[in-house]
Image 1: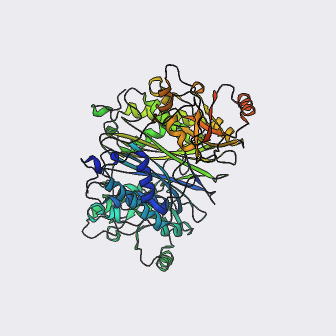
Image 2: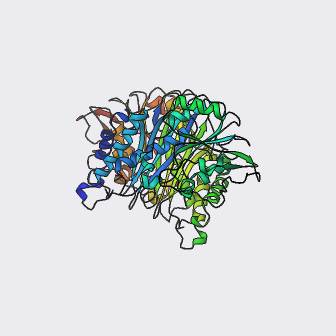
Image 3: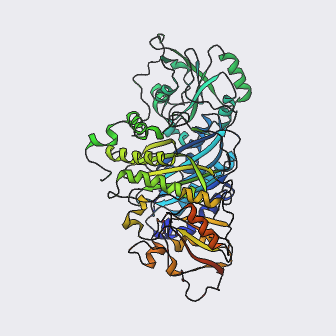
Amino acid sequence: MSPFTKRRAESVSALGEARLIASIRRWLGAASPRAPFGIGDDCAVLPTGRGRSLLTVDPVIYGEHFDAAVPPRAVGAKLFKRNLSDIAAMGGRPRAAVVALALDPNVRLEWLEGFYRGLAAVSRKYLVPIVGGDVARHDGGIVATMTLVGEAAAGRVVTRTGARTGDGIFITGQLGGSLASGHHWKFSPRLAEGAWLAGRPEVRAMLDVSDGLAKDIRALTPPGAEPALDAAALPRRRGCDLRAALSDGEDYELLFAVTGGSDAAFLRAWRRNFPRTRLSCIGHFVRRGARPPGALNLEGHRGYEHL
Amino acid sequence: MSPFTKRRAESVSALGEARLIASIRRWLGAASPRAPFGIGDDCAVLPTGRGRSLLTVDPVIYGEHFDAAVPPRAVGAKLFKRNLSDIAAMGGRPRAAVVALALDPNVRLEWLEGFYRGLAAVSRKYLVPIVGGDVARHDGGIVATMTLVGEAAAGRVVTRTGARTGDGIFITGQLGGSLASGHHWKFSPRLAEGAWLAGRPEVRAMLDVSDGLAKDIRALTPPGAEPALDAAALPRRRGCDLRAALSDGEDYELLFAVTGGSDAAFLRAWRRNFPRTRLSCIGHFVRRGARPPGALNLEGHRGYEHL
């Protein structure tokens, strides 16, 4: 469905601001607590948290992250889930979300309802309330920005830094072909997995792969080291070649480093806890310049560039 | 300065993503803590807060909240300050901000530098770090969205509800003419005033006026009541008529209700603490239908409609 309409009666602008906000609250339903704990005051009030807070922000933009081919519910769900994936990558638990929407007055009400109902479905599934937001006019475009607040789930936050030479490199799920397969909006954020990983001391560093493995692994690589990846071990989505697996982007899988030598025991523990989530050991970090023959050379591969 | 350029060498797209992010960190300087407490990981980590958290989000959009006539530093400052104003309106203390930027590849680097330096200046002034963000491509537009996390400053959060019939209605500063005077980007958010007001038990409800007094006062009005405003008491900006004062919008002043009968003592305490911030008692809440002759009839006045 195209988000835009030429019939004013079907558009957002026909409703007016007060009725639009009332509609949004109805579409969100139980996902939206009452003010001041939800929409309706100058700020939303969150109960006192138990530990350190996590904060992340990501948008979806018409023409960039979605188009008329993506169902509106999926657009809302995607916005929520890509932010949840960032919380998962720190081993965190999501607490509350706010959504700012910049939109053309000719956006279809039907599209907007789908978008918010998509947000509400994810909110219910992961028990994360939508506590506030903003709607503003933006002629010619749709930019929806979510900010998600979380907290450390395991008492520990896993950052991107901390891997060492000799550590094993692991990734969940499969890589490549996210756009063609619809994975970019159908994926499940790895929240349970991320929280469990944060509780394992042998997990030294972690991130979620969103711009392609070849690009994102740089942030995990310790100084003076480089990754030695085994091409045959890369979990490729059906129909994807090596290049696609390394650089397509929008995988939303967890990439992490595990203390060298503990791979076998770690994999057994994983399978007991997550028998249905694929986990692959795809290589290890070596001293820079010491990449063994046969290991992948990532230099020719690029990831997604945002600008 | 127009935010856009036709010379690719002067544009954001010429820089590439990695160098753009490095530039943003340089422009933000001390306003941007190191990861994981700032930009550079999947989420930003905030230290454990002392009380309930506040969360608010507001954008600035090219063509809507600013144009080529507003200096880029002022655009960044405005984005920050309109969010600070929402924290002030709850009596809160700001803790940390994230900024998501959706922008056309033809945006001038010089414009973008000004924008971030404007954010950095406000960050330093109010001691609020910018801990994270996102930059994404958005052909044809600029949408900058800030989410601000705060906490209750006085142990108490002042919401929009709680006013009663008989309460006095107060407003800080002056109203009207925000666009023509440049107040919409020059204003100072009333953070110190808001925090002080939250500590006064006679302050029952509060909000910041951003869409015009005539519209925003509805949210402060208790059920079964209406405001009885004295037109002569309204603090109008020079050159503004009554209509402008009631409906121009972007005033970013605090509007609040004070327990009836305590006006004089309250005003004395205010003047001791904020001798340089104008405060006006502009009327009081009466039973619906009991508006005295001579009090303003707000029915013909509208505020700013966002869509």
